[in-house]
Image 1 (cartoon, helix red, strand yellow):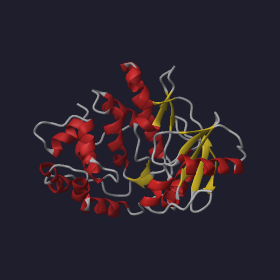
Image 2 (cartoon, one colour; image 1 turned 180 degrees about the horizontal axis):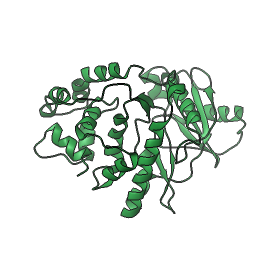
Image 3 (cartoon, rainbow, N blue to C red; image 1 turned 30 degrees about the vertical axis):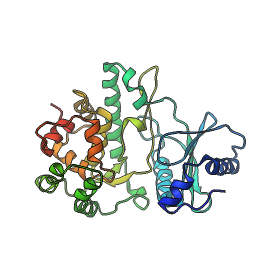
Image 4 (cartoon, rainbow, N blue to C red; image 1 turned 180 degrees about the vertical axis):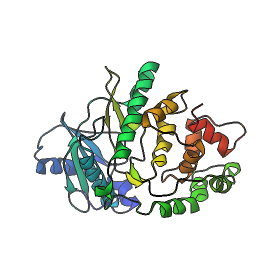
Amino acid sequence: MLPVVETDEQWDEVVPDESVMRPGAEDLCARLGLTGAPMTRYSAGSQPVYAVGDEHVLKLFPGAAAADGIAEGRVLSHLEGRLPIPTPQVHSFGPYENGWQYVLMSRLRGEDLAVAWERIPQADREQIVTEAGEALAALHALDHGPLADALGPGDWDAFVARQRAGAVEQQRERGLPEAWLEQIPGFLDSVALPTGSERVLLHTEFMRQHLVVDPGSRRLTGLLDFEPAMIGDPAYDFVAVGLFVTRGEPGLLGRLLKAYGRPFDPAVLMAYTLLHVYSNLPWYMRERPVPEAGTLQELAEAWFGTE
């Protein structure tokens, strides 16, 4: 019942339109044995996601993002019960029709950490980032071999080289001023990114919006959204950690890294910020303080330093 979505134009026409999406989601739920269950579409997220009753979540992926649906189903199945905080349990995943993929999973209990954060006292924030560091360490310690056929980028060093070649243009398209753009090649040349065989399962968007917290105990109760997962250098995951979990709050990144078990050079994290698939430096600068002197090295210390 859902139409083909393979282009950006088709995506913009179909995915936001509930008059199209809901009948398809209801039909799929009926096929999965959930006929008549109340459905509520979540407002956030790039993919159509529905709460189905009190226990289930249905996530849909059009043909243009079908590989993401396969990746999420595979990763969540691999992770079940293996992290110190819950991840959604997969009940079913696979193809629907016209190129669409789906994942039917359990619904995590708790509140979006990004929504709850301002109400959380400092001592509980410190405990939360400790738990986040422990969870990320456990994720990175898992054997990623069984997922190698489903997750990119394959050759990490080649991926880094491609991202580096397009780094300036990527930020120019996002509106970064020339004074910052001209620094990028020299800064990347100055940073020795880790080389060798250390590769781990990466979440890639480990941020408050993808963490769930119990509003009573103020403890983490879940980690979700694994569709952009990759296999690569562990430092890559700390771009989102620094920008969207600890966000420059004094002492929090250091605490999280201590729980994780190792530090990272701020310059390396800044380099990966520029090389990240979804890198948008102008947006980050609106969200986070920017040093007056305006150098990328100072930005690295401001955003990822632990002193």
